[in-house]
Length: 510
Image: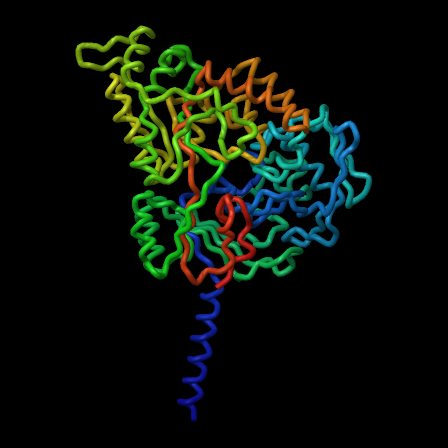
C-alpha cells in the first residue's frame, strides 16, 4: 500500500511539473535589454519585453487599428489642440497601487522634459491637466494630426508616478525591477541569460493564457535556432538568415510565416564631423551608387522583400513621391563621384577607410559583408564593427562615433514618423542631419488631417532628402514568424509585426 501511495505521489508530482512546464512560454531572444524604463531611451530589446509589462493609453491591433487600452475613450477639441482622455477604472499597478491620471501626467510630461525615446512624437505637449483621477486633459502647442497613432507607438507606455516622481528617471530602481499595469509581472533578469515574467492574475484585459513568459537571451542566431529546434524555446525571434527559412519550412513541427511590413533597412552617414568623408555630399552620393541593393535582397533576405527605392516606406503609399528615388546601382558613377570629391585612389588602390557599425545578427552580418564588398570595389576600405545593441546605441546614437552604420526601423504608423529619424534633433536621427526645408515641411504636414493636403509637404521633404542623401534606403523588410506548431494565438494573418515586438503576448497558448 505504501509503495502504491508513493507511486501515486510521484505521478502527481510529475504531472504537476509537466503542467507547469506546459504553461511556460519560452522566446529565443536576441540580446539583453538596456533596462526596463519603457520611455527613456531607444531600446528595441527592452521594448519587446516592456510590451508585456506596461500598457499605453491607446494601442494598435495587428492591422494598425487604434484600440482603447488604459484610456477607454477620448475627445479632441475643435481646434485640435486639446485631447481629453477618460481612463479605465479599477486598474492597478503590479505593486497594488491604483492607476490614475497622475500617472498619465507624469509619463507624458517626463517624456517631453527629459527628451525620451518618443520625444519628437509628443514634444508639442505643453501641459497635462488632471480634473479628477480618471480624466487627463493633454494640451498641445499646435494641432498634431498623428498624435493619437503615436501615443499607440513606441516609448509611450504609462509609468508609475508613485515610484518615479521626485527621482532621476535614469537612475531609478524600477528601471531594473519594473512595475507596470500590463498582462505580465516582472520576476527576474539574469543578464546574458534570461528575463522571466509571470502572469498578472489581476490584469484588466484579455489573457494572458500562459503562467510564465521567459525571454531566453541567445545572441547568436544559429545557436538560438538550434535551441529552438531542440525544444528549448517555443518561439524564435532571433531571425536566422533568410536562406535558412526554406529548410525550416520543411520541418513539420515548425511554422514559418513571412509577411510584408513597413520596416526597412538603411545605411546612415555620420555628417556631424566635417573631417569624415561621410560629411561630403559627393561621397554619400557615390556610396549610394556603389551599393548593389538587389544583391542584398537576394543574398541576405533570400529574395523576400524589395530594394530600397524611396526615402520613405512604400507601405504607406499615399505619402510616397514615386518620382523621387534613391540612386541606382552604378559603380562607374560611384568611381567618378569619388574622384570629384577629392579622394583619388592611392598607390595601394584605396581612397580612404570607413568604419561600418551594425548590430549582432545574421542579417546584419551578411548585409555588412555585401556592403563591404561593394564599397571596396570602388576604393573605400571598410572596417566592420559588430556590437550588441547597448554598445551600438552608445557609439552611434549617443556619441556619433562612427562613419557609416546599418539600422532598420518601423516606418509607421504615420509619415510623421520621419520627424524622429531626419528632423533636427530627432531622437532617432543618428546621422545628425539638419535641414530647415525638411523640418518645416514635416512640421506643417503634421498639423493637417486631410491626406491630400498633407502630401505636398511630404513630397517636398523627400525631395530634399534625395538631394542631401543623409542615408541610403537599402531594402524593404519582410517580417518572419518562426514558432512551434503547438503554439496557438499567433496573429500572423496581418501585415504587421510579430507579437514579441509590437504586441503583448496575451493571446498565446498551447
